[in-house]
Image (cartoon, rainbow, N blue to C red; front, side, top):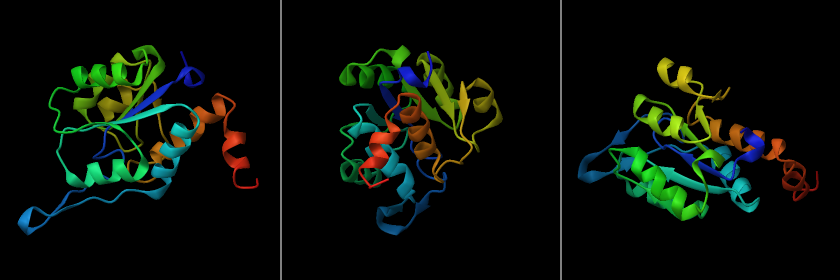
Length: 169
């Protein structure tokens, strides 16, 4: 299967939707930097009928807020073993593993990448993760990698023209 068959995209957060830097302050304050392009890309996927989910090992109010802003309903946080959580998300989305894509950057992501139809590593993922991936983005995590993937999927499925036409292009 290829990008033309993708029906859902599941993303790790730290290192994929962010550059991996964690800003921790007193009183439990946590900050993360998300790239607007990635958010737009995930919205384009959802508007085009492709499910989007987040799957992360950390628990963070910031992730919940970002998911809510983007309208992402399928989120798993604080997950130590990502494979069972991935299977739960796929069941919620009603998508077979073969028609799903998982985007990761570190070793913990490899089992999930191998479970789905298309495993994607961001450009700055660990070498072992890039080697295990079916596709490696040109963009780094937190720098538009998910937007790049969204465009590639939508172009492969012939839906990109409909996305850009919304903006008079």
